[in-house]
Length: 93
Image (cartoon, rainbow, N blue to C red; front, side, top):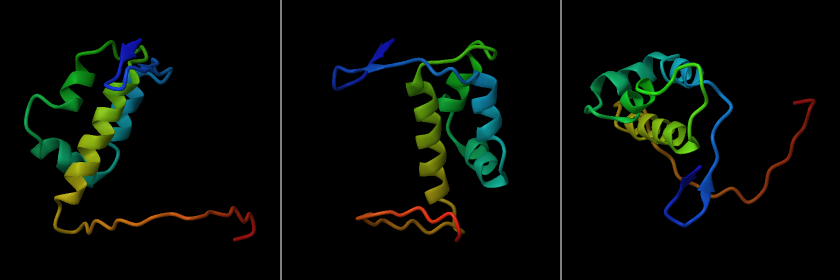
């Protein structure tokens, strides 16, 4: 386990690293972010790991943050911040 800044533990993912990387490369905008990101980055770190094993969740989280931050820099993306005060699930919608 890996300790995070607040002293808690981040458990290992049971999702193989290769699947996390496939997700990161699944969409063209994600690939744009990856291709224009400085090296080293979260993708490079994932590439160094055993592709058929799980990894510490902070590695996967770093990749999600990298992609999300990169998407916000794209001209065709407009970031919107809000507060959710409630949510309902309606199966018929």
